[in-house]
Length: 409
Image (cartoon, rainbow, N blue to C red; front, side, top):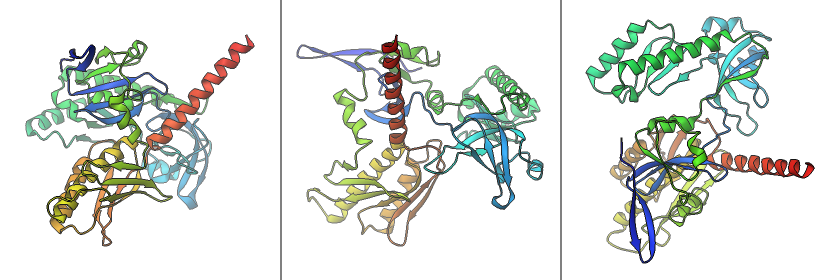
């Protein structure tokens, strides 16, 4: 456990409070409430503390109709509108020829509604724990590739086989250092949860939310050994008890000068680079585009070295913004042209490493024949800016309704 403490330093007559850890989680209670990760003075991750996204939620729904020509079914799952269930997402596979209108089924939202598209559903739902992901409609055992110790993999495989579970299972990276007793208790909890969900398939009402799986909680579990700073005591009641929380009312991502520039950068079109260059990020109908420019770069050394310095700085900033902005779909980067094959390979390797983290499946296509760098990220949720705008709108409406009620009283 990282020790987390305040360290005081004097600047004139002002006492500045500094955190004794270079990496820590934060929760900002200003509406809309947000949480995230700060490391080495940079905001690395940011999420709504109460995310309205349906992705990962498990519902009991009913089949409205089946369209063989489209190889799909439409399901009322209690969310906004009707969800789209491709036949390849119907489990068990034998049920694909039997599914019909009026059937009650359990589904998980795999993709939120985007623009005019419906939510994408799957009957192959998952139950996520700190160390284990239980797959009720699958079979077999998979162990995180990040666990590369042969003996640990062997031990975990033996433990999982000893359960003789009817469901499939993914053993997460965190399990490498987990005690067997804790793993067993977690498995038993997930198994009981699975049985409860499966038993509820024919309950009323037909469509109902059964389980919310907040991605923000995944972030907290992933960095559970880090300390957490919160600026509102009330937030602590909403956070897991295992977190080492410290209350600092002065902390604010949005209004403190130290963090405000990084917060504002998430929504800016033009991002300056240390060398004097810049990145212009824009959204088109079919893709996100990042254009790298030399701009006000001061001449020093060879042009080739200057160009590569700008491109490296841009690659770092673009990868950071992709994570913070939660961008998905097709992303095209127009680096400063004229690099050698070795330099392009260097940038490609960097982007693969920088974008390997996170819940979205990311494919790096690299440089095209036209010299454009292409990235594809799985579409799951709206960009962070759109999520924030929706949360701000909900907050304004809640305040408006509260004032209206108070006036009526």
